[in-house]
Image (cartoon, rainbow, N blue to C red; front, side, top):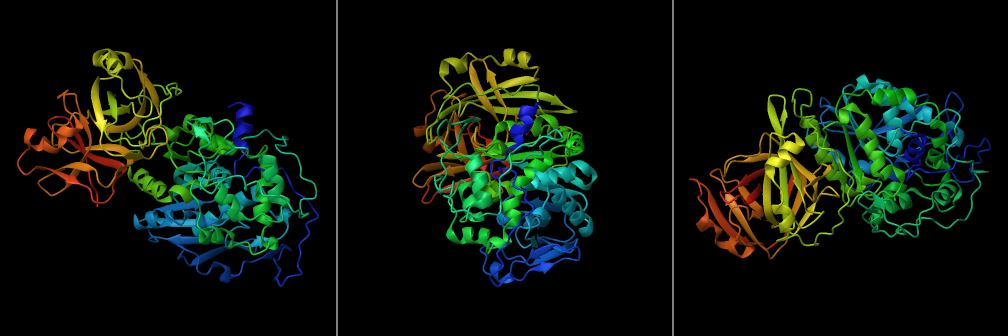
Length: 602
């Protein structure tokens, strides 16, 4: 990893700031605020409990661990004997950022713990910026884990939660069962390097315009694939750094609002501001960005621990974080260097900014539940990664906003794995519309020899029947990220199947992917029902066997199918919009014309 890459990954989108440590902290105590003092002489304030009343979607009774005379707060949910999931937030948020993830994880049987860093949320808040340090935050996390007796931890970190959490994990890998990172980093910077220059007189308050005023509540796309769109953003990191330290109007909610994809309702914005009723409570959030200069020379051992980490390691990125933490390079740095990241379903989520937990919390939690459910040690194919190398996207193509009847093709190479095999599914959607001359120029046997595959199946041409696919930013929902070229067609890895994938017609197949298919009201849909009453909706029709099949023929398809006993086919016009979701596993069946159907879950 080059020094330029290290520095680039260190410059954080939501936490960039010039160093602003200063010994002359001045606090306005003219208001009626109680200043408390630890036995070691640290002055701090404690946000009144009344500030946290009526917080929307936040029913948790808070608990505390005392470390060096200061309370470290955390919310807990789920069974006390469940596997531990530890959630660490960044700056300037607090554990409320995980409001949509906690219920999903707790309902799945996990003991969920969301900790507030010192100076944030309901944790105590020293009033001097000199009472905060990078190593201090890391040391407090270690003590927090030890006092609660947490073991075999499933860690999820983002933003500054990653700088702190990954340092602790790298130094104590035996404490952790798995690690997941979302838009984060563990910067490794040579000792003596000052990453950012110093802000003078950091405790002076100035009337400054907000640098976030130019960012709309509903974000615009910042990326085309992995490339930043020129001129799409004029966000100035130095301006933000100066404003966060000295701006009179600076508050947490404007940062979270600006760095999320979706507009936040007023009551949600108020919840992010609840821990900070006045500037006296804000030293921690103001100081966090300055700590970037304190990472120099302290993370080499922790990074060595991560680059030796064999246990499951997953990256889930929001695809609209314009800072370097949101870059494909930052994500790929973990995938390439952490052994446990090999073969995992890494993803860049659509409609997710820097604070991806706010934008896609339920989706992330569902992915974690599926990730934790896999026995990665005992399954010889769980860590499977084919010899196909990941390419840079070269074919630029914008599919229609409505995918119904859109043409595509699939290439399915099957590879040996342990005593069995794994089949990868590559799709043309998002890269081209599967031109006939290029598609029919493909030769399955030649591709198998070229790829070293057991065999290659050419599945197409096909046509989608849903209107929209949501999920992975590049492939429309796979949970995978590899790009490859077959013949002259560039495609994206969209799914993975244990085995050959050549199940007989009307046999249910498990496909590893995470997608949401949207079928809009008023559209005609086509369903198979099996003998047990499970319903499967047609996701795409195939012209591989019947080259003349069109969408207009599907209403009468039932009369042309050889349905097994107990199976039925029906056509229906949707009165309301239908979403068919696959969270890690999709249950798929084909009819005898190779049209594909996905099970409709409750």
